[in-house]
Amino acid sequence: MAVLMLFLLVGATATGAPIPGAPPPNVVVILADDLGWSDLGCYGGEIATPHLDGLARHGLRFTQFYNSGRCWPTRAALLTGYYPQQIRRDAVPGIPGGGQGRRPDWAPLLPQLLRPLGYRSYHSGKWHIDGPRLQGGFDRSYSVEDHDRFFHPRHHFADDQRLPPIEPDTGFLVTTAIADHAVRHLQEHAREHPDRPFFQYLCFTSPHFPLHAPAEDIAPYIHRYQVGWDVIREERWRRGRSLGLGRHPLSSLEPNVGPPYHFPDALIQLGAGEVNRPVPWIDLDAVQRSFQATKMAIHAAMIDRMDREIGRVLDQLRTMGAWNNTLILFLSDNGASAEIMVRGDGHDPAAAPGSAASYLCLGPGWSSAANTPFRRHKIWAHEGGIATPLIVHWPDGIRARNRFRRSPGHVIDIPPTLMELAGGTWPSERAAEAGLLPPGQSLVPAFRRDVILARDPLWWLHEGHRALRVGDWKIVAARDEPWELYDLRADRSETRNLATRHPDRVEAMAAEWQRLADRHFAAARESSGSDL
Image 1 (spheres, rainbow, N blue to C red):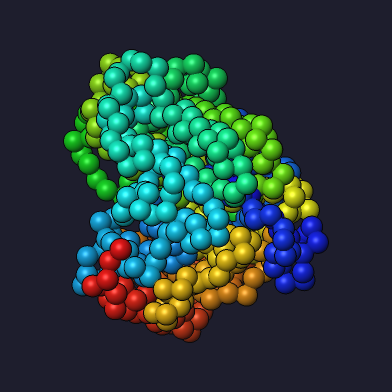
Image 2 (spheres, rainbow, N blue to C red; image 1 turned 45 degrees about the horizontal axis):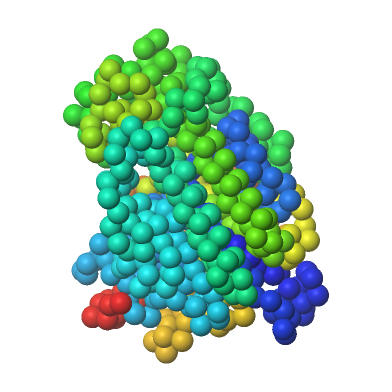
């Protein structure tokens, strides 16, 4: 998680409101799955991502943007503008919640709000939101619900109707299919609805495990990562600093922090090359180094391929004449993943790594590199788990080129941003009637210039991991552990815990975290009998 006119920069009023009679904008939101903060070239990485780098070069890069730390909470927040706990899409004490929770009727999805404004909406890729896609306001959808197979998915749907399973060895690749359907949706729109704006929600499953990629995609990277994750982290950190992403210190590896869930049987299946702790590369033996370097080569190949498929979607926007007035947003649903498991069709140790018969996960060593310079991983509320790149590109609407935006933001800000630019009202009428105001705010002022938006504290909770950001101060705690305190202006990488130096600040921020938690839980409980 593409057309939106930033009217302010092309003759709009001083408030950023749409010019009367101006054409409504199109929007493309591109969402990667388990992409690390530094995996893209334009965020310091060595992986070839020329199409995304091009969007950044001709647009904006946000340096302090956040998600909700995991796939389904982030997707719910992105399409509703609410924290997932408010709408029962993450765990809430005392009521059904989490990944199986049902949204209340005052939290419609963004396409349902855009439809009365004349928009047609299209979805392609991962879903992970409650309810059918078309019922959620999308006019067309291709949905991949098989997250264990990139070459022959068994569970995928067109317009909520199940499609036949893909047979093995047919040349099918999920990443390509997701882009194919997005291109078809846009071609159909240009042919049948040329006078209406569109919202394209393009959700890749890359580079989420299993690490699957065609051999020819892996080949260019097969030797690149033999230097190890220590060296790659250092290179990415230095490159990010030279790009202007921030002068933050490089966090240390945490050799005692492994995957968030322990699957001992999987480690046995994966063999002697697997390592479930981010120990120094020099401490690995030759078998482990070879195995680990190959895993990162596959991760890189998956991102490289995703970028190329995004390029085809961008070409379609140009072909249909929508390029200049399309707002494109690119981001990730959480940080890179330290998980190690074996699911799906299992893992054949004799199979070529990256092939359909293999089942590999990135693991904490390379996840630490992918999230450079930050600590921890997907699921945690430390910066490595919740920080995401955000690229914003819109030729007609944003005058700035190759600029950074340093205001903190969150995926809850995307719906109010798009609704403002589309000429709609926010929050939805149902939410306003219920007195349940969403916590997000419009990013439009930050599109105009590099300003720090005045906003309420940013709040996180997932599986006991919790955090609160107030200005440049952040408290964060892993499950069952005490609060840590960081000054993110000087230490975004969370290397110097200041909790013992500022106990009063920790106490006040912890009380605010609890106040917001109580409010969010109350919203979920008050509407527990009212489902979509």
